[in-house]
Image (cartoon, rainbow, N blue to C red; front, side, top):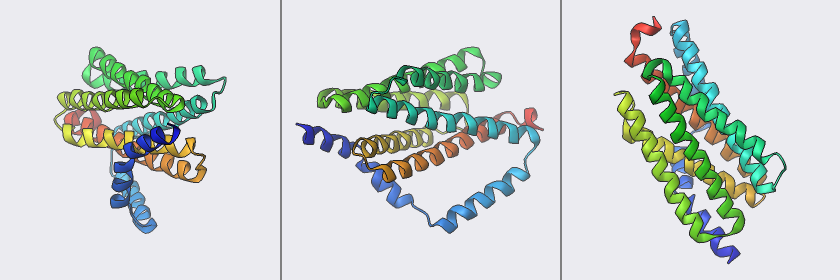
Length: 223
């Protein structure tokens, strides 16, 4: 039974491996990308730079506190509840970040959807720890459905946020996180670290897409 549910979880992350292999770039390309990003930011107004930095910080925290919560859950650490509380605060912070542009109701709805994203992630990890294949399939399906709902909601707010693009990006986030959970659970420490780095970089890219979409929609606010 133990090998059956581990095989199931590994299969859930298979598409992530294929995506990462196809999307892998040499170190020189990453360096060039970083150089281009710095040049691009130098051409932006101070308000645009501030928004990009705010969103990057929030989504880096999303990656960090999610990983901390996963580790505490898998290891049965005493700080699991405190890690979850901090992680859930990050979801509210992300919701608050869009309120200046889309209002209180929209910000609260995004925070609620992101909170469900975290709650369901906890269920996925719990199913892994218990070895419950049925629950793992159930919560993984709910996890992806929630990602689709987030993509649909965000795209309804801003025409620059394509629903398919956001859906693909959120799915990739889930795939990378799934692979990280598997690697950590199997004590493949180096692989887990690499997957965390990839997930963090991916979320930074997502944060830039969101921030740039806001600037395009409300250009007068960023002159």
